[in-house]
Length: 188
Image (cartoon, rainbow, N blue to C red; front, side, top):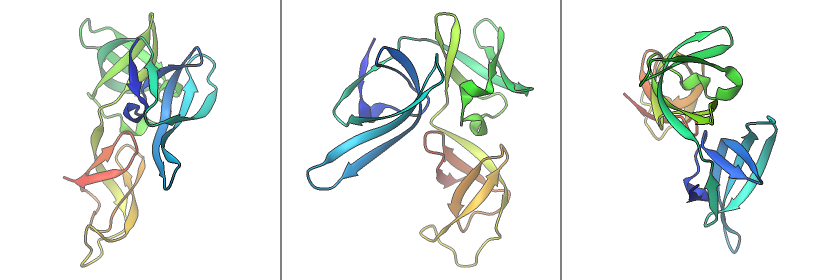
């Protein structure tokens, strides 16, 4: 197993903590002024029990990554409450339950390449690319003279997620969204 700094942990990473394997759901870097120092606030879910835990790690603390077999797969389509992926080496298809992709299904695009993590022969998590390009399907109309430094407004994307975007973004625009934080990055 390898150890990484707490600041290198990202959403959907798998870590070993307290003799359990956890999937990181959300992570935030928090810096408190003065003597407090910086730390990572990590929300994680036990892949076996399904329980959630909020844990705080010092920025310089080393965290154990879980030993997993990583397979390159391609997302094909949604089937009922499951999501079908194809192994890019042997073309086998597997269906992963929605719970395994908790909070990240809004970043899935047809034919998207992802890494599926296996512990033994069991899939335990999906690693998304750092960002995706989505199309804005619905947002408030363009505000004249709006600039990039102006206020933000909600926009619904083609995958159904809501993203806060700058006022100059209009329906039909392609936007780059971070899969870690769900934040708008740029317009394409």
